[in-house]
Length: 448
Image (cartoon, rainbow, N blue to C red):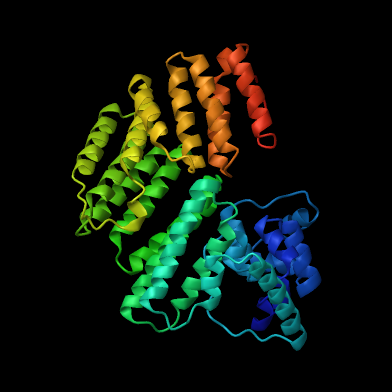
């Protein structure tokens, strides 16, 4: 007998329960399935039917003998159990629409208590973002949009300084808030502004997942960002998102995908009147990265040359979008060095990266760690073991100040590259410092 439509929805007090929220965040489906059985009366056989899983598979998960990791399965669980996408690190699901759920008085009281507790916690250390969200008028004005843009700029600054892991819940919350605002009638100007803000928040969320090496989640949010930008015809921002996805593809050892994505990004700019030289310079450098990952020396050098040509054309009055202002001369120089480094051209790469590292702002811990890794790598390629290890120790100091699994992965990579020198005092000292600086993130010595 089919379940009544109303029974598909999980109780409000379950979806707001901190235990359920944490279980979803960790994708601990053993705990999720236990909770929906105990609190919503959804037994394993019903879970299997709703989520298109076999009963035996669900039973293995509940018994702790199996984990569910594939994104298509996680999406089926979200859809089948009606768990909002953001709780599982997914983009908004197609069925998530504005609604007025019917809840019992007891559920209303429990939900209200939970919200009150969360509000008390939030207000005890309230920041500008939470205050703006609480005070925002549903009848939005251009100044309210400016305030939302300012909060995004602040998120990016804090992401550079500390990493995005702790920011992500706030960014996702603001993303869903803005998407909800889009469901109401707005003027064309306000609606376009909200689409742009939502696209930026989705890209930032994707970036925080990418920096945490959670690539499937990152791709989902990048895709959502792409769709939001496409809805208002913002081709420059679409190109920006595609460039982010291209960079991620190089990390996933998919250089062919990286080149296809950045080529699509450049195609978007050809159809976008008024694309600024700074945007074109950034995209050309992403193209250089993709060609370098493929080992295409000539194409990489051509793309680097194009990036510098575009950058030389930048004027003081160019209407650059805010999201590309980070691509300054220091970024151009270091990316040029990294592109040469990816090709194994260490003699060209080393002085460029060293110069950019000297210019890098001290507060940008992740940037400093990332660039110091590349400098150490090129120094090692040139046989400068002592300098390379010293530079890598500088990278460790910066990495310890920021939450970035991507940076930690690079430091492990350098550790493995020290394998031929594992008995040398400099290599031994670096390995010891690595264990001390990142005690919970070191996978072992470079020796097999």
